[in-house]
Image (cartoon, rainbow, N blue to C red):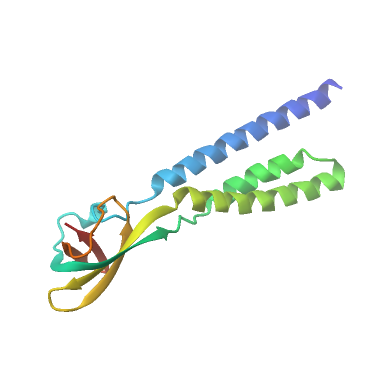
Length: 164
């Protein structure tokens, strides 16, 4: 009887440990989201020459930037779900519950990660001085671009930003 209680206590401790690990991983994922706004630069972009063009805002539209999809969310969710499932039933039923818990946890973990890192964005359509029209999607940093406003586009190797 006492050894059976130890198993339950150990399983409970393992479940708590897995839950803490999953929460730490989820927080780590949200902390890793890089800025995609007009004022966000990666470290490697410092001290590089960029092309600057000027234009006028023709349209502004709110968009959503999808969240990250790394293996961290599904793996953490699968671990928690598998451990939770292992506490159901016994024998063969327990094994089936463990697998189902792991699969469901993995799917839930992926959804939580994507939702937690999703961001509001803005699509800014700009008519350049040469007549060319470009649309740039970036994180909404609260710039509140207005129609007819003069803005600058900063370009570098496939990256374009709209700024004032």
